[in-house]
Amino acid sequence: MATPSWVSFELFQKTLKNCLPDQDVQLLTFTSTCAVPEGENYTSDLYRTTLIYLDTQKNAKRTMSVIVKCGNEDGGVKTDLAKKLHLFDKEIEMFTKTFPAIYEILGEHYTLSSKCFFACNEPHAVMVLEDLTTLGFEMLPRHVGFDLEHCFKVVEKMAQMHAASVIMYEKDPSLVKQYGEGLYADNEMIREWVGAGYTALSDACSRWPGFEKYGYKLAALGDEALERGFQATRRRLGGFNVLNHGDLWVNNMMFSYRESGKIKDMRFVDFQMNIFTSPAIDLHYFIATSTKMEVKIENIDIILDHYYAQLIANLARLQYSLERVPTREQLKKDYNSRAFYGLMGAATVLAFVKASSRKDASFESVMKDASVEGFRHHAYNNDRYRKHMEHLLPYYDSFGILD
Image 1 (cartoon, rainbow, N blue to C red):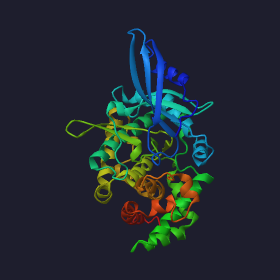
Image 2 (image 1 turned 45 degrees about the vertical axis):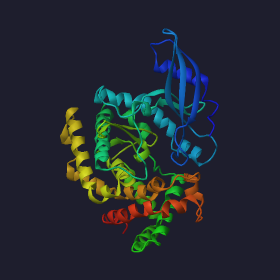
Image 3 (image 1 turned 90 degrees about the vertical axis):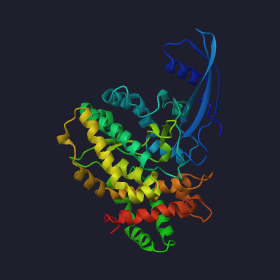
Image 4 (image 1 turned 60 degrees about the vertical axis):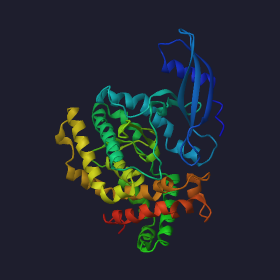
């Protein structure tokens, strides 16, 4: 995949000046390659670019690696999705306004994301970001999912971001106005994608011995399944709301490790789906899409308890009145009432996560191609996905959401 024409010498010269404002530097050359394989990224194009530049004060050549994130302008579903969900508007807002406000509240030692060196949305959507791999961060294989240790680190960082966003919102509500809708925005394209997911899951259930009843239940709900999923997303009057990442699947989290193999740190990436609503949104989506099977079977309540303890600890450290925070039982009740959001994530994104890497892995394939050879059929009928759904379907059904 060739880099777009606007990924240019001028762009990287600006990047260097923003990144190294106190140095006199001159870009000499750059080379770009795809940062992720096909079938690993669905809403934008990512390139890893090596910059070779001259430090004129020391007359020395230096190199820097950055990640370039571009809007796709091929006119397909990826392009339409980015425009309809305002994906780059949101991510640029996160890096230029929201994160500075969050870090001011958390303190200078807290880091949730990479640095952003350059961002613009006109005439083309493009961002230049810190390459976290140069700092020792890596992604885990999406097919495997996270064990309990990794889950604890994720919800610890999640709680930091959520807690700071509560205080940020009270200081300046305008800072969350961009985050009224997340991945499951109620529009025609998302309805088509989610509807195709429910249909494919229902069809797959008919071939899983003992799980046919879940297919029947989903089919019987029809469009009501869409409405329940969208309803679970929304802010509720008087509810406890936070800025959710909104797209916490395996590829959107990177980890660094100590020599012992223990986790050292973690960063979130990809801030195009943020939504200001109940923290149950991040919790359901993360548990559905990113955890190992053993964690889903044994540790969901432990993860929820750890998240709540971390949320309370962060809010207390930030001197927020805990009288205004839901109790553990109230949080659990809210989580339970939004269980359909978890099912919606499992019926859509989890299928992408567990699918094999294929050139036809895309929203468009799921929505348009129902053939046995197509990506949709593979995504919903492979053993990895089936094993997770054979646990998740009874789990979500236990909340009474399929009746």
